[in-house]
Length: 231
Image 1 (cartoon, one colour):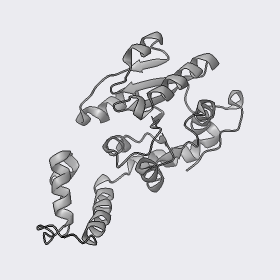
Image 2 (spheres, rainbow, N blue to C red; image 1 turned 120 degrees about the horizontal axis):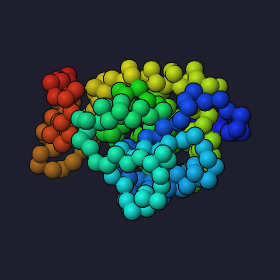
Image 3 (cartoon, rainbow, N blue to C red; image 1 turned 90 degrees about the horizontal axis):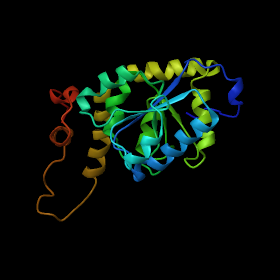
């Protein structure tokens, strides 16, 4: 879902007194750290009513020390089971994924979506696909155009866009992670089942349950632990 951002910022009436934008996860250069710094700098230069929140690690961290807490808050590392409470504590208006390159499934997205906070994400890769499929937010067009991204953030949280914002928030709250995982595993099962190999274990049956067991072993999420998928 793309939101127009061409209306001048000063004429926007916002839903929030202060727009809180949360960035979640380990943020380094590959995940858009440089973009975040540019966005925070421009927010300060334009004196916009936006507060940035880093929930997770950030590298290089020393560059964050130059910003006042009113502009940028750093939570630091967290355990994924604590994320819902952390999001509730900071009460962000929007969750932003700045990654300049397409990403894969993204567990953090699954963990954050039930909070009910809509997303603004890179238009490429699985993160964008999942946000669009779940109608959970918006995509930006150009990661290098920080001015347009800020305008889009202002528009998304404006009174003019309230109906769309509320709908995205509701879709996040109603997010069913297990159903989405089942659908994803079903697609993977079909792909791998169509692969013909000469390996000695090629006769081993690939099933949804095997994939789910592998998923639980690598990323135990309570919602999935007692779940059973059809063979």
